[in-house]
Length: 59
Image (cartoon, rainbow, N blue to C red):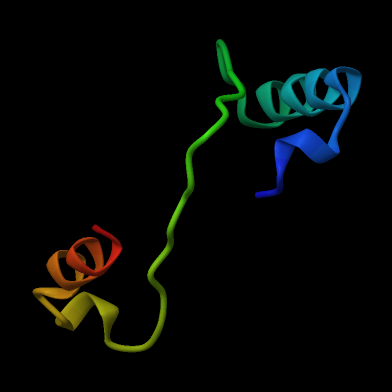
């Protein structure tokens, strides 16, 4: 993931074409103003309230 303002429209289009090809996708779109948060680490699957804690912390 990266700040999309750092790439020109032609670079974004090329990335979309490559991602569509590599993953056999019908379509892909670039959306601005959002963040993707990943929670990783040992024991994540056993921590039953981890998602609730994380979303509360972000709110």
